[in-house]
Length: 157
Image (cartoon, rainbow, N blue to C red):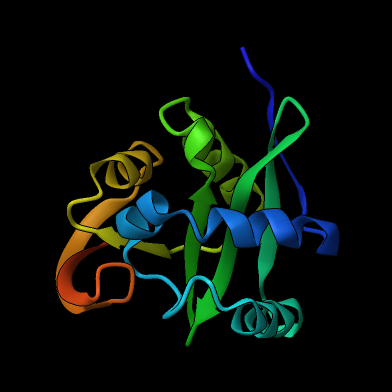
């Protein structure tokens, strides 16, 4: 079985993160993405902001020591939120679920919230297996689909 671990995200990881977040299949699945996934200047500016935001826990996910994605917790107002991005090569292998479990050990704040496109069955399953429960849906513009879609909102108490 593969060893899935978290470590602090480093500047040296950012090229790989940028490439992962440009993958068209991943962008469509995630839906709520950057307006232009190919805009490296906007990506770098956003990453610079994230580094100084208070309360952010930003981690690299590794599988057997290899970079496999990112996972983070951040504040939206007073609410903690989680997000993750897994390289498509690692989908379906339990990486997101284990990474989320590890992040939730690092971030004891409860409740914590998450959201996913309502048709992103894999991500919704990961969140629900971690104990999140659906609290509702909302519609919003998804850059990754260039359309308004439904997002499922979840909460872990």
